[in-house]
Image 1: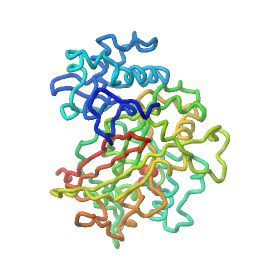
Image 2 (image 1 turned 90 degrees about the vertical axis):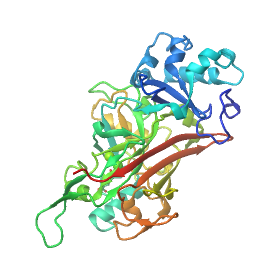
Image 3 (image 1 turned 135 degrees about the vertical axis):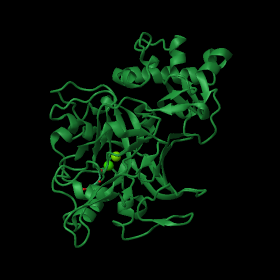
Image 4 (image 1 turned 120 degrees about the vertical axis):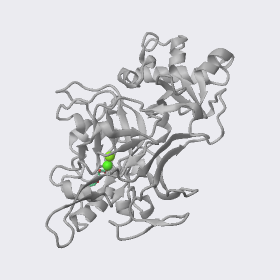
Length: 425
Ligand SMILES: O=C(O)/C=C/C(=O)CC(=O)CC(=O)O
Ligand SMILES: [Ca+2]
Ligand SMILES: [Mg+2]
C-alpha cells in the first residue's frame, strides 16, 4: 500500500516530501553548478542527472532519453504520462528502505542526494505561454461586486458557460523568494479631476492561485477533449498573481488585465504530480446550468488541496495567517480549462503554465485576495501577531503554502513567497 512505503532517506513524520510525493524541480547543487532536474525527498534533493548518468533509469521510455540532462523539465514534460509513471516507479524503488542500489553505494549516494538547504532552486521549466483563468465563483462574485457595483450584476452572464481567462505575461513569472518591486502606473482620475494619475500603486494585492504545467501539447488547429485533458497535465504548483488593483481598475475595460498584473507572478519551485495527488481526488462542485457538451466530463473530479496565505510585515518575527482556502472550491476544473483553451484549435506547448484564477471559498476566512478581505479597502484585515492591512505595504512578505493530508503521510507543495520592495525611482 502506498501509505506504507518508506525511504532509506530521513523523512521526519509530517514532512511535506515523503516518498509518496516526489515533486519535480530544477536546482543547482552549488552556486557554480549547472541547473538540473531533481526531486524533493524529506529534507534532501535527489539529483536526477546523476541517476541518469549512472544508467539507473532502465525502463523502455527513459533508458535512452536525455530528459534528465537538461536545464529545465520541458523535455520530460513533453514525454507524457507513461514516461512520468515509469520515472515515479523507478524513483520510488531506488529510494525505498529495502533497495540497496543507492542506499549502500556511498559514492553514488553522496553525489546524488544533497541537503535541500544547499540546493539553489531555479525555474522548473521554460514557460512559453502563461494563461490565467477566473474559475472561482466566490471570487468572481466578490470582485465583480467591488469592481462593478451590485451583487446582482457581479457575475457576468457568460461566466457560468465559459471558463473565462486572459493571456498573462510569461516573461515575468518568477520563482518563490524573488522580490517584487511595487509597480507604478496610471490610475483613475481622483475626485474632482478629469485626467488619470500616474503614481506608485497604492492598492497592491496578492492572489492565491494554483497553476498546472502542460505536458504534451497539441498541434495548432487540433483540440484536446475534456476527458483527455488530464493526460496533458504534468503537475501543480502554488501561484501568487500579484495584482495592482488601482492600475487594474483603470485599464481592464475592455481587454482585461494588462500592466496591473504583468509586473510579477510568483510560483513555488516544486511541481507536485497528478500521480502524487491521486489520493486527494474529490468531487468538483456541481454545475448549474450544465456546461456545454465539450465541457462536460464523463467523470468530473478535482483535488482536495488545503491552501493557506500568511503575511509577514518587515521586521516581524512571525507571519500572520490571513486566509485558509482549498483548491476543491473551484467551479471550473483544470480539465475543463484545458479543453476550453484548445477548443478553437489553439496549441499548447510543454511547459506552458495554466493558472486556476484566485481561489476563494464560501466563508470570510477563505477569500484569496486582500481586495476581497478588506472589501475593496473599506475594512482592516487584522494580523494575529500585530498590526493590520488593507493592501500590501513595502517590506511585506506573502507566504502561500499547500499541504494535502493523507492517510499516514502528507503531500506538500513547499512555499510560494515574495517580498514587496519599494517602487524604483
Ligand atoms: O472581477 C474582475 O474584473 C477581476 C478579477 C481579477 O482580478 C481576477 C483575475 O486575475 C482572475 C483570477 O485570478 O481569478
Ligand atoms: Ca489572477
Ligand atoms: Mg501576475
